[in-house]
Length: 132
Image 1 (cartoon, rainbow, N blue to C red):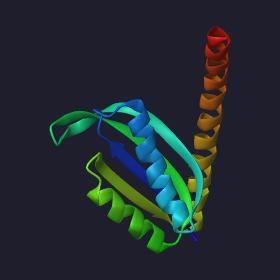
Image 2: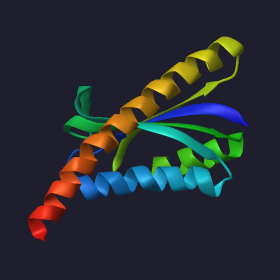
Image 3: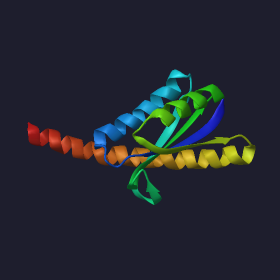
């Protein structure tokens, strides 16, 4: 199993639920191919360096995972045909130095993920209290 990072840029015209669904779809493709999702880093809506398909902005998300080359091939094939994905890029980490850097980025992404989920929990509890 190799270490990979895939950056996905999703169209900004989608709703938040549709964006999350696109990210989950990419994750499920990896897991269906016996890959393991290690972390995700949702970078949010950002301005693109240049317009792509007449879009000035895009939603950036990075998925860190371990998988075989076939899983990456299938992920890229599915992303290529997905009209909601503006761009994607997969990077393979193979040498010891690259894997060490991968581990650092993975730790940072996990830390960001846990802080985001901690921020969402009180907001969800508050909305549940208001509904009751």
